[in-house]
Length: 96
Image 1 (cartoon, rainbow, N blue to C red):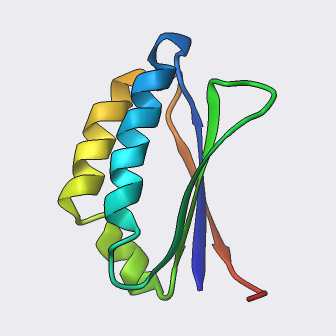
Image 2 (spheres, helix red, strand yellow):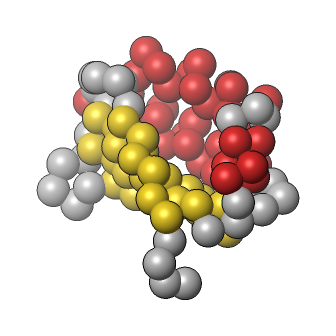
């Protein structure tokens, strides 16, 4: 399993809009072949900080995610909402 966490810091005036755009992306992403999880997490300490947790069965499935129309729409809609560029961190799953 391939896991990526994406750290995002959102401008405070865009938090609600960011959440809505992420929900749309989530609902489509969980339908993708090879998707295991696609979680959107908001920091309990700082409402402008988010982590996206994406898990795919294979590296190919993860790469295909970035070719989808819903990913492209999400990326374009949230880019101006971010206080700084998002940071993706790839992981290899140990358990499960």
